[in-house]
Length: 129
Ligand SMILES: [Zn+2]
Image (cartoon, rainbow, N blue to C red):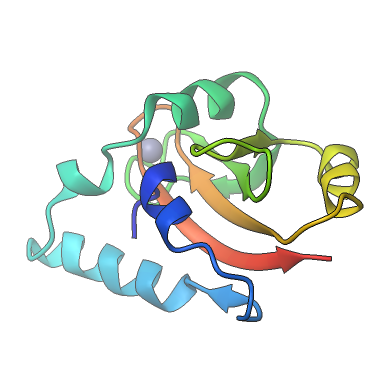
């Protein structure tokens, strides 16, 4: 599913373990190829996501599955106490570790983003400990 910080925030609960979204990703890409799913909708990225992907996020060494012209970037959104309703965008392991050491339950959402066509998809979400 495309990533929207607000939706993710509503779903925050930390009782789950890691959730992997690769299956949904494959299914969505297949549906787009068949014309069943809307490509425009899949590429409707949150502006913050694009901004971070373009400027700061690490490269994934993988091409965008839709436009194939751009290297995917990995963006992590972390939700939890005192990070605000939109979560915190985290692009470095050090910052992730710093948040993980704080008190409270935090959840990280990893999103792959193509800053060129806007393709974005959740890869996994997992509780930070
Ligand atoms: Zn792309």
